[in-house]
Length: 230
Image (cartoon, rainbow, N blue to C red; front, side):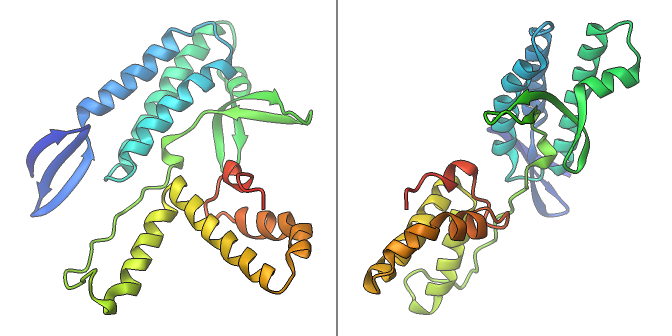
């Protein structure tokens, strides 16, 4: 194994002739150090406030590292954060047992049995949870190697480059917004043509938000689902 260099928080090396890019040890250490500092400086802070301070830091670092070989690193990072949070919880409740501490600070949410989360009241009055973001919940994105024979100026390869551009747009919020705008403009144009626009407006949320935009395959966020007054 040959290490080439550390650059922008990434470790670039060769293993049996294959190029591997991982989060660098320096970047991991700096990230965990920042997380520990936040936890230690908020010993008496409410759990909800602590989670809201940690989430932007975790989300930013993970989104930066999600494009490289980082799945094992994400698991280790989650474990280190868990250990730090567990020590904080034990210090706050020295006379309580492990089961009581676990039941107070960690809850079963989705497929994760141990989720560091705090119960809050939603805007509609129902109960909800503010939960910590976990690195392992972030999908790793792999970039497809471009075909060597492809030519962007050759009409034969037009469909190939359109597919690549579409995948690229789906992996970013701005790209999904552009695709959504294209879809809406195309549909509205057809509805104007056949004078179906009033009916379209009457059923717009049922058709689009429930059937299309809420589909987890598309990956649209809640903000994107309400960003267009169509």
